[in-house]
Each structure stands twice: as structure tokens, then as C-alpha cells.
Image (cartoon, rainbow over all chains, first blue to last red; front, side, top):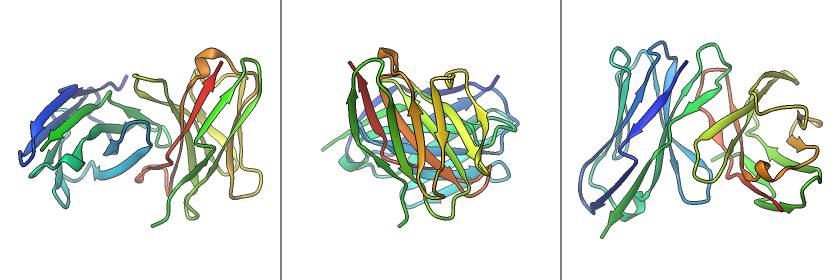
Length: 113
Length: 113
């Protein structure tokens, strides 16, 4: 059974720091992994999708890496800004499951000026 | 940029009442999903819908729940007789294919009193 864990649960940093958010999963037979951002009381905004054949995916200040063999993905945020404050979720489709996503509990990030 | 639209943003209903949550997916999406997030908990899968039928559903999606896409554009989730424990944020999502990037709506906050 696929389980997704995110560490840390919460993070508070000063503006300008480079950050690493972690996502681990138990079943390495994955198609892809998707990172989302969720603002309080709001929907999920897709940040990056990294396919199982890829090791990295970049969008602006965000870089996601994937290591299937160790069951880990990291989301790197460069030069953090207060506007980056949100909860970051990783999600993995259940194998053979029509993109039925299994979500981690998220990392709640606060970037203070 | 195309987006998934959900209405209403917030619905308050009395226990035992029927509610219908509505979603307008992105036009080129073929796979549709409902997820929910109880306050403080993980996002969890409810149901996937493809080619006008349910392709997969979770244990949560019991006989009180139904989905349909009546007119080829709107995608609805009906809860026949709401319970207090149905209070949650409900998200609609769509994908072009079964293993591609998922795009979520802003959610409907359902409060059952």
C-alpha cells in the first residue's frame, strides 16, 4: 500500500533562504509525482509534475528532484519570499489507479520578512 | 490560462439535506475526479470518472454519493442525505490522460449543521 510522508510538517524561515521540502513514498513503482501549493482555505495549485523517467524538473525558483530507488522527492525553493508562504503537498498516483492521487499531509511553510 | 471552476465556494446545509456540488472542468480534459479534505487532514480521493462512467471509487464514496456529467461540460457531485461528517472541502480535478498532470479547482467548502 502506497504511503506518502512529508517532512518537516512545518517550517518557518526568514526571507531569502533556500529551502528543501521532503516527500517520501513506500512503493517505488510510480508513474510520476506531483507537487502542489495550497493557500489557507483554497484549492490546490499544481507546481511541478515529475515523470518517473525524470530526475529533475524546474519551474522558476522551484526545482523538484525524484529518486525512485530510495522513495524520495525533494522540492527546492530558491531565495524564498513571503509570498511563498503556503502548504506544499506532494502526491503520487496509485499504481494502475486512473490517476487516483495519494497525498502527503503537507509541509506548512511560513516565510517572514 | 484555463482553470477548473467550482460552485458554490461555500455551502451550508442541514443534516439530511441533499447537496449538489458543481464543477466545470478544463475543456480538453477527459478524466475527472472528486477529492475531499476534512479540516486538518490529508486530501483524499473520492471518485474518478471517465467516458461517462465511474472508473474507480473509494470506500468513502458510498450509496449516498453520486456523480454525473449531464451536459458534457458540468461535472457534479451529489450527496443525497448529508451527515455532519460530510463537512469538508470538496475539490474537483481533471486530467488530459490517466497519468498526466492533475489540475484542481478552488474547492467548495461544505458545512453540514
